[in-house]
Image 1 (tube, helix red, strand yellow):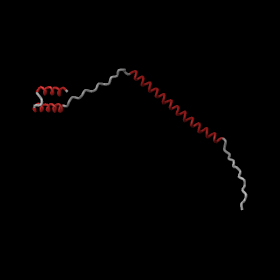
Image 2 (cartoon, rainbow, N blue to C red):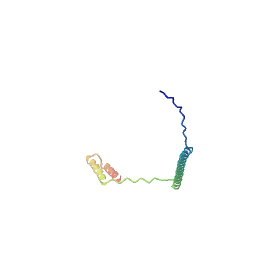
Image 3 (cartoon, rainbow, N blue to C red):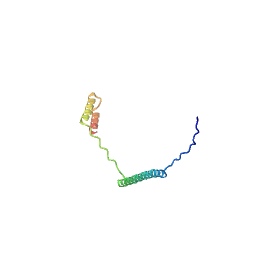
Image 4 (cartoon, helix red, strand yellow):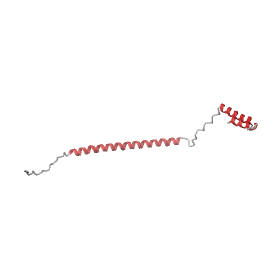
Length: 114
């Protein structure tokens, strides 16, 4: 019923000698080129940053040392309606007897001046 089996012979795989070598050269060459390109771009960026820093230093040296900010603009004059309204309210206070004529004159001068 059972037949004796033949002994199993190992199968010998023959790989080409040059293929792994060429693949390694291609991959290694591509990695080398990419690394070199990255190093070159990093060096260029450092050179550019150094040039910018030099220009900023030159501009800082050329600028006057005692730089003064521009003076703030004067406050705009009060609108005529606002002045008139304040004077009218002061006049009402005088009519009600809450302000004396001297106090009214001082407040009126203050409103007209400011």
